[in-house]
Length: 218
Image (cartoon, rainbow, N blue to C red; front, side):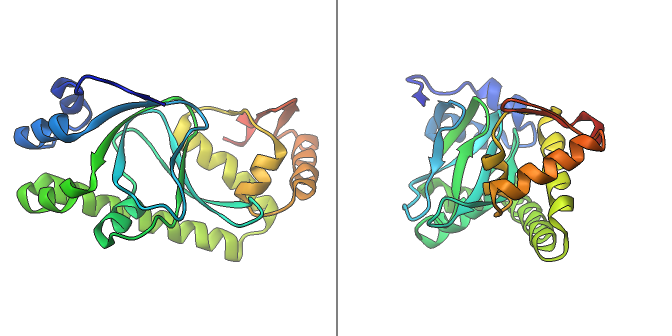
């Protein structure tokens, strides 16, 4: 993780958020911390108090919950131009984080101090709209995740894992292990390996070492 010594340019902020008021863009440049996060880095940890929250400029972040055995449930992804609604909730309530956030790839973020959140909600209409839209979007995604866990079979959830990844990355190659997929879907590696082999036999996947081509599914 690299914290840049210089403020982020207002031109970069304006390009990513053209709908923000000029004064808000100036405040983000002044108050925000420009950070480059490497793939796999942890941005937020469960059980820790959040003193700042990330806005994504470039790259991809996954937001999830983990149990004591390291299994995780993927809640949603954060794409460029998005902010983590659950982090905002913890900030407003001055609560410990109930989620973890990790960089899926090298990512550029602006880290905003929690003190700015409520002030900007009062001062800037576009910031309030931005935050409310984030809540609505994340709520819909959480409902989709709950429906998937409650009502879909594991093979359907596995296919959804790949199609969702394509929607947020535009890529059809998953570079990772069977265990990583199992953790995301809260099941065992053996179950995932068996289902992957079935999908490969059907021609839906091409599997090699730490790489899965799921182009046929999308």
